[in-house]
Amino acid sequence: TANRFNAAGLDSNFAWTNNTLSSNTVIYYVGSDVTIAANNQLVLAAGAKLKFGSEAHLKVSGKIIADGTSAQNIVFTSAKNDSVCGFGHTAQLICDTNFDGSSSTPRAGDWGWLSLETGSTPGSSFRYAMFSYGGYDSFSAGALLVKGVNPVIAYSFFISNHRGIVLYNNARPTFTCN
Image (cartoon, rainbow, N blue to C red):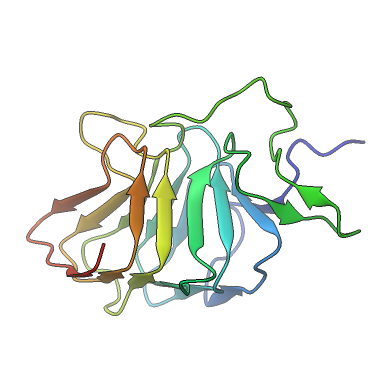
């Protein structure tokens, strides 16, 4: 039986506690809403690539550490974005995560958003991260929603989203060279 997506799936039914996505060669696919619970954290390795399905969200009530490097950005993008590639188990190059050839083109709002929730664990950071084609609800959502918390957002790019970052509830991120 063929896979529906050419990626490692992140499932909303998985117990997201303290986890690290350690590969910088695998594409991680978020197809539904995934939550990092309070007092837990998700660490993304430099070069990690997350592709999101239509309307999918990553809700962080705990903490996320997404610290890439200038040579290995962490990517949050649409599953339709064939310019972001990984490698399969036999080292073959995989760019077409959704198996549709060239019949789909990424656009602003293809996926939901990543949200840092009010009361989430302090210390979340995004360094050398790229957010593209997010913000499903064009009226209120950006690719990154920050709700009353103060993450570090440094050396990061927001490209072709409905909105890049939306701040709520007196959120005061520390911005550096974005």
